[in-house]
Image (cartoon, rainbow over all chains, first blue to last red):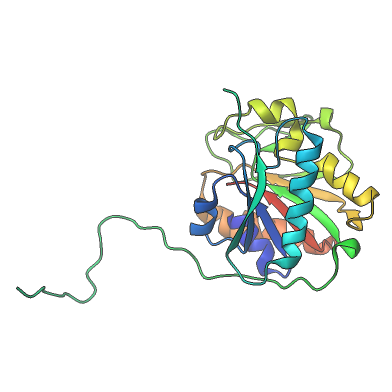
Length: 83
Length: 150
């Protein structure tokens, strides 16, 4: 998150895929998306190419669409790890 | 009963304060963007030095052409089971390459940057690690960054 802010502040737009949206909000994320995933599979279920592609495409779409700092957009993907 | 007010009185308990917003506007369409992944998930090349699991402020560079089997994770702060099965869970490099091949984005940036988040020396991350990674991305003309962490 510190690194995200550092990159954003030199003029490169960034977006973070977060498993813990309250944490990234508190730490001042410029832009975030939050699929329903556990920490450790932020970008989607292992070997689920469809889900991973969907999350990444929607993340990039939100990079363009989010127009104010600190906005966190939920994404409609769910993965529950079997532990 | 009236409450007594004392100017400048502070809590003894450290309360993290959300820093001021930073924001860079997007100025070009996705199809014209070179995109990098930057992650705090502890991903690195197997040939590279692992992160120190007790706390590490260094970062690693991973070529945009790196294959799954050349990558691994050193991170003591989350369950690595899923990412050990499929690196794309935290480092969606195969998916990013597919989006470049299909024209959704222009290109995968030459280099991805990785570190081990979830702790460590916040001051060093703020003053050194973050700015160093940002400068490298600028030098490599990266248009946008997707991150995984948190």
